[in-house]
Image 1 (cartoon, rainbow, N blue to C red):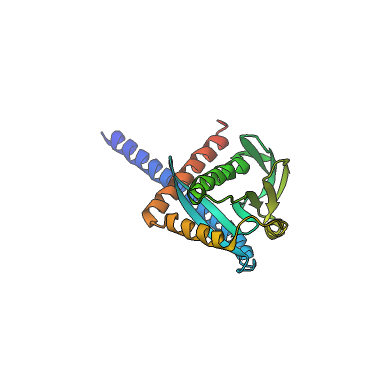
Image 2: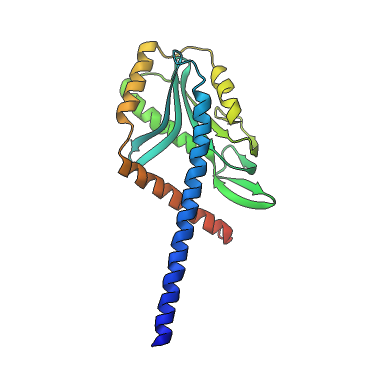
Length: 224
């Protein structure tokens, strides 16, 4: 009888420790991601407000739930969709590969291809902006922190750059596509459909981070 009690207590402690470690990881992952988004947001503030409209942390409804876009810049030169990654180590991968590799001191970890991830954001934005019947010329940008080194061969339209290169990439576009009135229409529409409900946003973030945690555990256990 006493052995059974001890076993139950031991299992309860293990479950509690597992839950605590999971929560610590999720908080760390969330904080690191947010720090990267803030770093890029500070840079986007340097864009002239009369030419560029910036929306950070845009969450849109989709047919399968919700999707969160780190940064959207609307200008007469097109709409820029920016995915921020605050990683370290060496990043390797192919433009069309399902997964990339993060190498930290010889330890290799699998990660989802950010180009594909941002393509999903682009398609979601295209779907929404069709409601306005505006040709937006959407540009995809994936931005990494300088504490990593990216080794990605990209031949398509998506730009994979470091944080400090985001503004030069945006300013490189000089052809005008969107009128001032349509810029205002796009901004107004996105602000209206942006999901601001705290519960919905919390659930979205928890689902994403839990999936990331499960994926990381599989990697560490040699499952993938």
